[in-house]
Image (cartoon, rainbow, N blue to C red; front, side, top):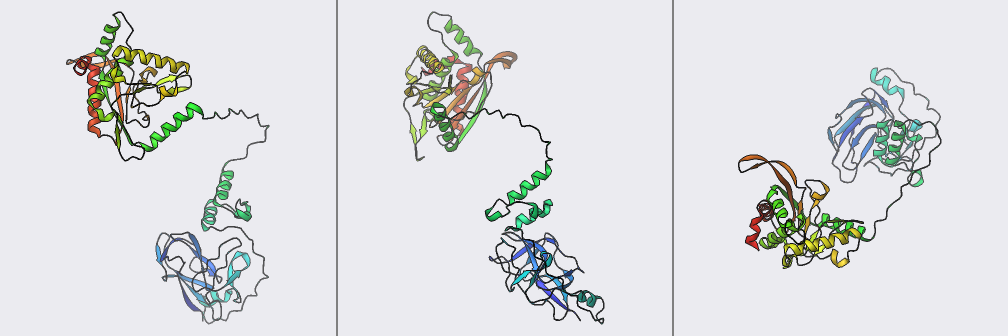
Amino acid sequence: MPVVREFTLPDLGEGLTGAEVVRWMVEVGDVIAVDQPVVEVETAKAVVEVPCPYGGVVTARYGEPGEEVAVGAPLVTVAVAPGEGEQPLVARPLAGEVERPLVGYGVAEPDRGGRRRRVGVPAVSAAVSAAVAAPAAPAAPVAPAAPVAPVVVPVISPLVRRAAREQGIDLLSVTGSGPDGLILRADVERAVAARAVPAAPAAPAPAAAVEGVVPLRGLRRAVAEKLTRSHREIPAATCWVDADATELMALRRQLNATPGPKVSVLALLARICTVALARFPELNSSVTEDGSGILRHSAVHLGFAAQGERGLVVPVVRDAQLLSTEQLGAELGRLTEAARVGSLTPAELTGGTFTLNNYGVFGVDGSTPILNHPEAAMLGVGRIVGKPWVHQGELAVREVTQLSFTFDHRVCDGGTAGGFLRFVADCVEQPGMLLRQL
């Protein structure tokens, strides 16, 4: 008469208390050999195949895929013929695998067909199956077949074996790229990709067109490093508002109708910035190198974005708050020309405390620029273009621009930033307000 043995989930080591059933590798009624894998489970560490220490007929299995099984809870029951594989053992790993014995198991070696069985214990006989069906009938043992050398596949990770199995990849056909030919997950993924893409017909390869790599050096490298640092270190935020610039443009035309140097839109915007910073001095500041304090600057060194032959640069107008609108225009013009021909000095490109970015010259409406580190704020101005606008209660075509304001949230909150931007917008819409501040 066969003896029914219960196989419980063994201690898989590393303090694990249970495992989730991934898939069953046997069905009820299957005849299994000693130490044949019967179930694949997933722990917090890996996916592993669990071998059964008993050979015989599977009479029951416990747990569906996705269910958690505790260590010590039953996995399968096996009807074992008297005298046959009843001794617990350890699964010996394939070549290249890390040996990880299951608690209470002994030593095993590979059986034919790649299965593992305990040394000295015969493979399960067909008599076990017969005994389950007809207990009284004697069963003749089946002569063991000649041993066949096992095929060795250099795989350590059970995750790699699982990936190969799910993708239908024969590991014997995969060349490992790891140490001593070890098959890695990347090797399986390459095998899957190679199978998915059909081989293209052989054809002469055209000469490769290599454009080359442009070295990032000099000013371009310095700008890149500064912008990267700003993006990494400064918690910047942006707010924006549309403003009716019709009156500002009218003022410019009026000023330029008189003898003397022409006044640019940029000069008027620079004048508005210096007045606004006098009203909101906390925005003319920067955070210390170690981030422990805020440096308030008494002078406004106004930087402005300019396009030069080597790309975007930010020249600085020193002590902009002391210059008249005409003087501001002259200095902005001089620095713009120097940027165009590439003659700006290092001193003219450093030391700014606030930046004005007139990206409207590129025909765009808005932007969220990166702050010019270590400055705490930047005003952006979009193109001034005719748009439908409600003016004095009626719909009209007005010259409208979008103003954006990016600021370091460490130096002020949204209320201060919003107040600054609203004041700038009011000055754009009603430039006569500037007289109160001069």
